[in-house]
Amino acid sequence: MTDSTPMGAAGAASRSPDPALISYTHWMYALHALSAAIGLVGSPFVITAFVFGWPSIIAVVMNYVRRSDARGTYLESHFSWQLRTFWFALLWFVLVGLFSAPLVLLLGLGFVTWILGAIVVGIWIIYRVARGWLRLKDGRPV
Image 1 (cartoon, rainbow, N blue to C red):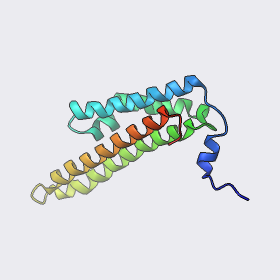
Image 2 (image 1 turned 90 degrees about the horizontal axis):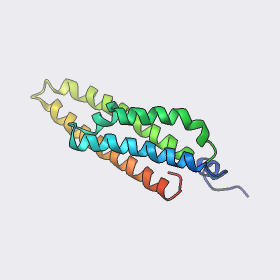
Image 3 (image 1 turned 90 degrees about the vertical axis):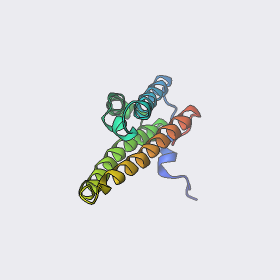
Image 4 (image 1 turned 30 degrees about the vertical axis):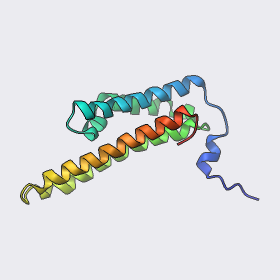
């Protein structure tokens, strides 16, 4: 009989992570959350503060530095989750910009699509950071 658990979840449960690495992962989520919060209160959009803000950039560097230490633990899913959140946010930022730029010539419609796109991606970023951090708090993979 074969195991019906997805490969990522099965591999993530193979060993317990170092408590220092769990704390390190909390710090990465905190930096991403700080970038999102800066976007909510100080920057025009969450997406710009998240993709171009120092806290998120520092968190991405931290992620790549210790990613190998998380392999084989449930933290591996958190490291991947955070990286995918950052890089997909950047991709969506570029795509929204590319879509909106030509529409600026049509009575300023591009400004509307840019604002709507930035708001939607900002909500997605907040969701991903919150969901991942809550799962980490519970000691579960994402």
